[in-house]
Length: 153
Image 1 (cartoon, helix red, strand yellow):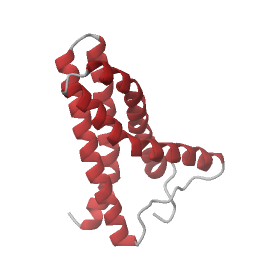
Image 2 (image 1 turned 60 degrees about the vertical axis):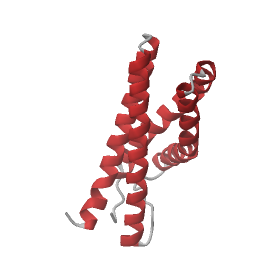
Image 3 (image 1 turned 90 degrees about the vertical axis):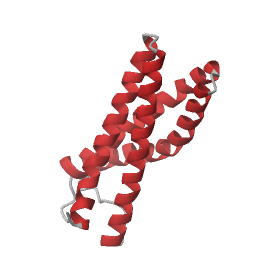
């Protein structure tokens, strides 16, 4: 497989990793609601690892794009209201995505240190942000590569 072929496959892989992380997050929330603490821990750990793999693949894709095209972004092909909608999703996704690693690490550390009250309080903030980032990551993929691909791509 060539460098360009790998670069072309990474967006779909990244979207799949985001979807998988979101699935683990939801399953982890269901597990804790059912008081299945060990399953909850495993599922949230899986969500964290999946998100870490996503981050590595995301950065790799950006580096590959830069090496091939001299730019690290993919142009959106939609216009008008769709472009405004896309930009709103993208901006909120990027801003919240920057917070997720910090929030997730602190939330996980509280759980590992058995500081469950702090863990619960922070998880009420971390979970919806992390889930939003996972879902909007998939949405951004579909908007960029499936529904509104740039005509010059």
